[in-house]
Length: 170
Image 1: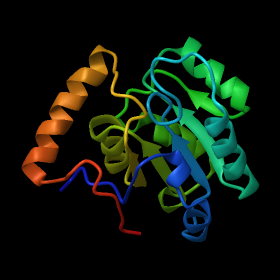
Image 2: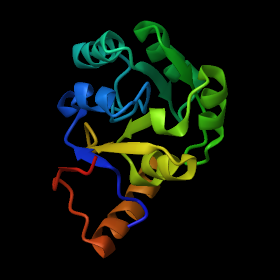
Image 3: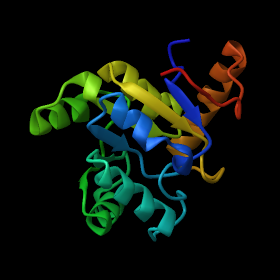
């Protein structure tokens, strides 16, 4: 299936950071809503802070990209002290090209982690980078998320890609 991620895990806390470091990953693009924090919260949580600190400890550059507005995205980026990009137009690869130029990295050194096939994983495919899918933290989306989840559920059904059938194909 075109939208199958390289890795499918339950949440960010299940990511084997040492493994992705050993795979040559130098930069991890992170989605915010329902990947890093619940989509209905305005506060950072300890789990998200710990995750970003661990990435930095292993010298993996964490960067937030989101289709959300700048006010929300900048809040999390500033709190975590990492670069961030709002209104990223995922799944289009424009932000990837920007990040690639800024950090002077190759595609094979970049990975994205997110909770949606139609935005995050399709972004990875259009950018030709590796991807990690996580289950959404909560089952609450904005109007755009509801539309993409409906399409995602249809795709999962056709492809027999079961929610909760975790795997690692790296």
